[in-house]
Image (cartoon, rainbow, N blue to C red; front, side, top):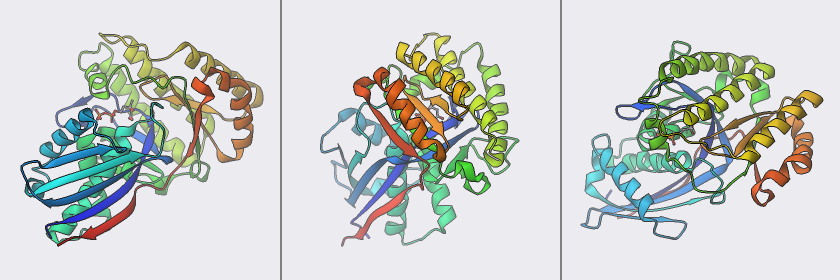
Length: 349
Ligand code: DP6
C-alpha cells in the first residue's frame, strides 16, 4: 500500500505522580501515574504517499507553525529505526486541539499520542501485518514516549503508569501500563476542573525543565520521594482513600514547583493568584469536609480534582470564590476519559 490516510484523536492526561527528570533516550528518572482526560483532546490526520524530496508538511489548526513542524521532523527522524517504513514515505500531517490555546494544558501529551497512534495504524496498513490490540497499544505508547514522555500514558483510558517501580512489576520505562482494572469505583469518573490563572506561554519548556534535575542538589531525595509517593498512590487508587489521595496529590504538585524554585536557574511559575486559590481550596475543604484536592503542571494553572458527586458544590465554590482569580474567569471542566479513538482509516492506490 503506498498511499493512505489515517486519523486518531487522543487525550491529554494529568499526572498525579509527576515525571520530572529523564535520562538517555526518554527514560524517566522515576515512575509516574496519571488520569487520562476526556475533553482535552488532539485530533491528528496523517496522509502518506511515496517519498518525495519535500517529505513532510505539518499544519496546526490550519496554519504552518515552524516550531511544531521542526519538532515533528526531529521526532520522525528519531524513530526511523523503530519504524523503518518512515523513510519510504512523504507525510502530510494536520492536527488540532479541542481545548483552547493558552490554557497550559499539556498539548504534547495529546498531540504526540495521537501521532503515535496514526503511525502505528499506518505501519499496519503499509506492512499488512496486524498487531493484537494489546501489542498495538504498547507499541503506540512506546512511540509516543519518544515524542513526549507524558504522551506514553495518554494511550490508555482511565489511569496509566509509566516508569519502573518495585511497587508494580508490570510497569516499564519503555512504555506506559494501564492501571484501570485496579481502580476503586470513586476514581472511575473523577473530575478535573482546570482553572486558568494565566494563559501565558510556558516560561520553561519541559525539556529544559527535566534538564534542571540533572545537577539538582535534591535530585536523589526527589526520586526517593517520587517512588514512595507512587507506591502510596497505587494503593490509594485501589482503596479509594480520598484523604490520603489529596495528601499525596498536593505533595507531588508542590514538590514539583519547589524543585523548580530551587533549581539553577530558578523558575517561579506559580502566580500570586495560584497561591491565593490554593489557600481558598484548603479553607473550603476544611470547612465543608468536601474532598477537593488540587494538582499543578509545570505552570500556574490549577487542576481541581474531586469525586463526581461533589460536582455541583464544587462548581458553586469555583463560581463564587475562585472565578475572580482566573484570567477572563476561565476554567475548563474535564473528567476521567476513555483514551484514543480512531477517526478515519483509508487506503489509497
Ligand atoms: C510536569 O512529557 O512534557 O507535566 O518528555 O520532555 O516531552 P518531555 O516532557 P513532558 O513532561 C511532563 C512533565 C509534567 C509531569 C508529568 O506529566 O508527569
